[in-house]
Length: 207
Ligand SMILES: [Zn+2]
Picture (cartoon, rainbow, N blue to C red):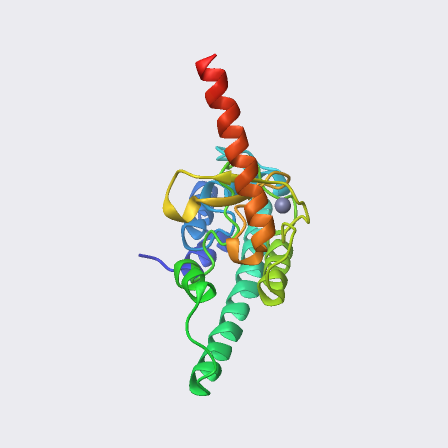
């Protein structure tokens, strides 16, 4: 299986057919797609002005989209290196036992889907690297009341789907926010709101 960097080389290769270069960019997103594969693709299409199925597009747009993905990947991998070093030091000093943040990192190592958008058409407008910088700042600051990406404070609660796709979803930017960056109060409020919405739906179904 080709790695991210060899796929990125194909995207930039002027000797390759444009359709292949576009295909290679999509394959890059199987390795690294902060909003999840489909939402990240939708984000790149909108920001760089090409269509989902556009096979005859200006290759410069593909390269600009790749630049954005690579910049975001560098931001995330640098954060992971810092995180791993800090954990190693703390372990060496006997300062801590693994907790929820370690579990979350194990599941998201490499950065794929770290700011997953469950609806592929609803995602932040920000460049990917900026969204990740904001998420990282929140992970380092500890639990808060707001969406780390857009600052919104209204969350829906997603119950079903895959395990990693359950939790608080920002109603403004669509990101499934890692529960560990939200305070207990914010999580409880999101769950209460979701339970109320379920009750209203059940009443409507009965009535
Ligand atoms: Zn948000």
